[in-house]
Length: 317
Image (cartoon, rainbow, N blue to C red; front, side):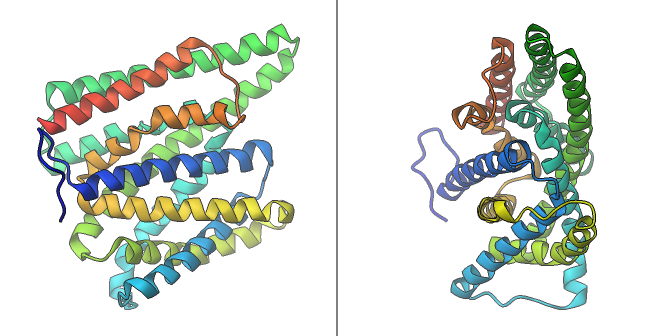
């Protein structure tokens, strides 16, 4: 393994590249999903997920031709990955549903999976919670609470000033539903991160092969759910290019996550994913998917970044 010259830094080149990879792919995927849900108003969520997963598998199988890794097909081996596939389905579906929230809030609340992972590591792996680590969790909670309050205030002020009181009530109901889906997403994301970390270290398979196993087991269930969904929602054929492109971003997320899971601990993996919250929150405004909002909203994003920084420093020492 290649190492960066040590100048007080203990991070390997592979770890640094994986952080950049997972951050950029997560940002691109969040933007695409936000566009599909909020701008394109695509209702058939399982159809979107089925197309994304099909694109992922097509790309990964092509990559595996160059990697040259033999894929195992025995039932005993694949059943170990089945629970992970179910976690993936719940995670990505709830993530799509939660995209009714502004990107900034979505990324802040996504950090809610971190305490769950830390508690697991503390109970089962003897993880030691240091002072800086504890401080990072305090900043994390403060960030989420402040972000929630500022978003509610922004929505109320905007709608009241424009005389849309009924719209304000409707938006608030949608936000509450979005937060419920976000809670489900946090739990499923934590389960996914914990399980994938265990399997990647135990099996020794490559990140490409792991992503193939996970997505190939998930695809049949997604196709069945998409077929059932077709009776309720119209298939969004005119948005197929955007859906397929979102599949490419999902593929990047899938590979980067499995790669990071093989070289980081579960808690560190979760905090690595938290480091990109500020650029992800800004992306919604840069790409015109949401308005600027109040300064408190960005204070909450800043607290999220401080939280991730505190954790990174605590792990370094």
